[in-house]
Image 1 (cartoon, rainbow, N blue to C red):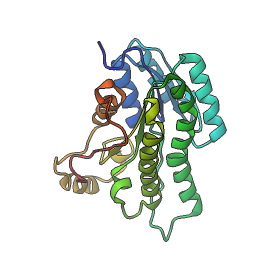
Image 2: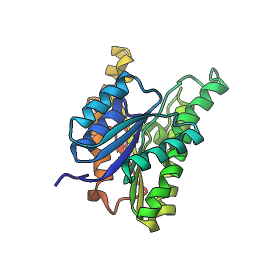
Image 3: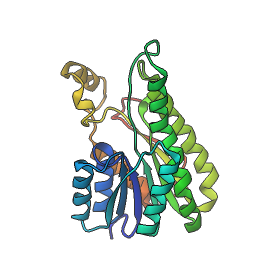
Image 4: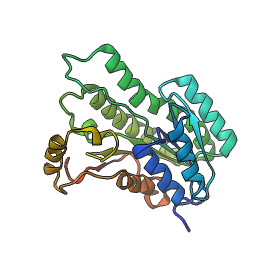
Length: 248
């Protein structure tokens, strides 16, 4: 029996990177996957094909996670198509890093809206179905930067810290209905985004990590699978740092 056999998940921002790794891991464990990203592009089509090839029902949806009405629309479409929402993974996120003295209002608002408001949007829309089912697992992607802060990332750090507060509040609010809420705080994960960091800076990052390497999207996906499954049936309101002991 696969860990997520017969369940249905929504994963936001899953055409690439950590979101895609989570979607693929879920599908490998028998989970049907509805996923979203901003555009119905080649990445979305490729991810959809990879998921379907694993023998599950899967569909990609173009959606602006930062827009309340658009999120409500897409969640309604997913419920009609899939019939249930057992797992919600709020993964959509962006960065616009710069020192506060140079940060514009647009850079602040964009990061808060995509990273934090999207979590509110999708959780509010998906909770209707989970409340009817009296079950569900909500998994929010935060960051070690949301736990400890980082110079030049005040907007990103604030958004990811906000996700932690939201996660803990929802765990208390929805726990009596059998709905769990947890956060994952990844550290230095090797993705398309971090591959753009100059070699010297990347090596300095890795040297400061006790495990002496960056993590992989698949390692984050493993923790998400644990939180999505019944293996974590009594785990709620927690923040699991996936950082190689970088942040202890």
